[in-house]
Image (cartoon, rainbow, N blue to C red):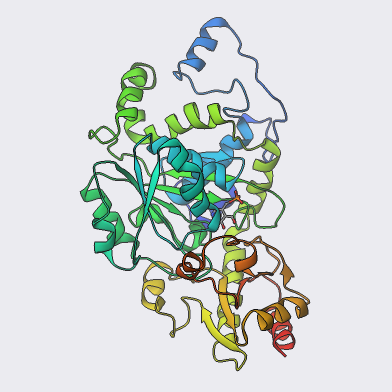
Length: 430
Ligand code: PLP
């Protein structure tokens, strides 16, 4: 038996999405990744128990902390991102909130753009301030000086999304990375809309990637899930992060200096925030995400192909005021889109309908294949009115900064036959 594909980082993306991180030899040679449906694992003996709790030995004790099914998903995601390590969470928001709590404490500051997913903006504006964590929003996310002037000694992270929602704006991510690193600050990118197939943030200035795996990674609208991937070797001992300095001192003798240099962020994320806040992903969910990952590249190819065709159809349609999609030469983000997303800039479109709210709602009512839902990244096509759902309750100026107007519809283009989707939109636009 010479099967070794699970450990080979030299293999292509599509091969790794099927094989990375899972050695059947360690699981009774089951070809499918088994679902370890248990709450806890036998500790064995006293010495092993101590080693597990000192983190001196890799292994599983209690499922809130880790389990073998999730471990395969984490290794697979780390491989697909070319990162050092990953941690899975019960939702994208658990992944994002835990990531930030790992980086920030009372009195610390986030620098973020205004074009974020509404749930993340709410977390930053409504929840974190009560715990002494504040966010400074960048005035113009295309202007690097606007980031720089917000940096202080208390800045612990710059947080952006690979593709804005629903404006589909593209930021010059490498420039943001260079600025942040010159100040010893890590960059976190929410790459949910792009996936590691279309864009790998760790290769373009990010130190940490967050996902709502609910979307394209799982891919079929069946689970809520999140993943965090760390690039590794960021210098958390530079003086800016006292919490990592004490973590290092307390753990270096057990875990080892090299492992801590490589993946200190995820070690502490798991030990403190996954474990204490309890946002773990169930092994069942990890199994569904793994199944989704097996076809990620194939689905994404079809998603972007369909999105491009639909964007071109809608661009210039007499009932359409504006189409936000970086794959269109008319988009202000066309050049940056080509630079960062050579395989295609995702499959979400922001579309403004002529005739205001009423006209947009009429389209929502008439579509027959696109389904009216707040989700995105399903294999099936979805449509939503962001101002009354994903961005509901945000002040009008904030909505506009994110590309949300009363006449905006957001399309999540699925993998159906493109001509059926175009015909559906044609009849709905009338
Ligand atoms: N990030 C983005 C870009 C999202 O669109 C979403 C959800 O829509 C989230 C994060 C939150 O993920 P979840 O719903 O899995 O908690």
